[in-house]
Length: 106
Image (tube, rainbow, N blue to C red; front, side, top):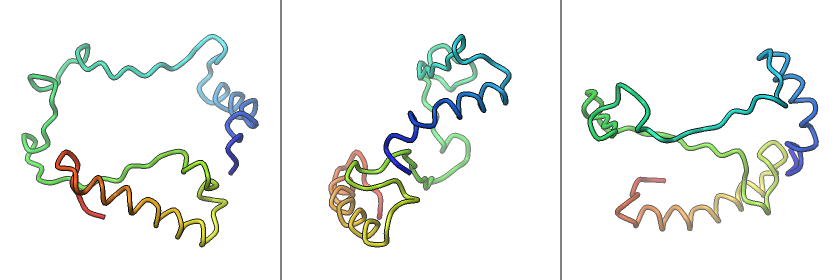
């Protein structure tokens, strides 16, 4: 639940991942590619419009792996931390809601 956990526990997680996936992570590395031009089966223009699939509005949740630096990770947060984080984020959400590129509700 600390900021350094990813690095502190890296040897443990590396061993677990190598065993589970039967790979050597010193020789293999996963690289994300968001280049849609190389994918097949996408609609023309590489735009996935949910309305074309018969779906209306979509509600989604975005998860992040970290919180704001001044707060601990969720498992170590106190009730007061959570309340203060939400109060800070409400200001950000209000700006996003007012922006026509984002909108939405909170």
